Length: 114
Length: 112
Image (tube, rainbow over all chains, first blue to last red; front, side, top):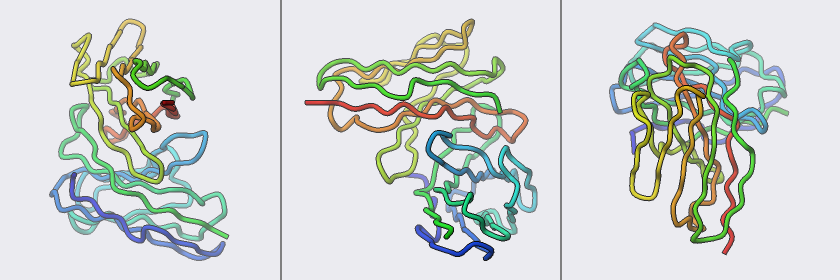
């Protein structure tokens, strides 16, 4: 398995609080992605990074920000958590871009916003 | 993004073949992927196919690609109860750093 860890694995928080999820990789892959998974929607892209300090928005980026100050870490921040952000969050990494860049997924973080 | 379409449910008997179908959207996608997700777990890459191929076989898995119709299928031979999971079809999105555009997933139930 690709060396990807996510922390925390589970989190319960209250509406209005900031939350930061961490994705850590040991593969030195250039590309990193954050997705959320919700029933009836499959996985949807939140943000992605194509290098240190290089990030861009995905399909469902409102209410989220990201940072990548080191190759190995990609942080996802919910600036003020809402109940609609209750979801399972997956990080993925890819060595190369282009359609040949196979993505490997972390174990996920289950977030409940009360 | 546009929708990648998959049937939502499939039930088969143990030992039979399973066929999961997918219609994708981006004709420029060079690779197409199948991922498997077991309950409470992350996504596991099962296989992928390059767009200039019509078929790829990997042990019990056979992927068929009809590029003209943008149709992808995954056949699992001799399906086992351990194959019960959700299967996702995905295409890469060039405009989003080659992130993946997923279908909603097909829940495969294998009964003894």
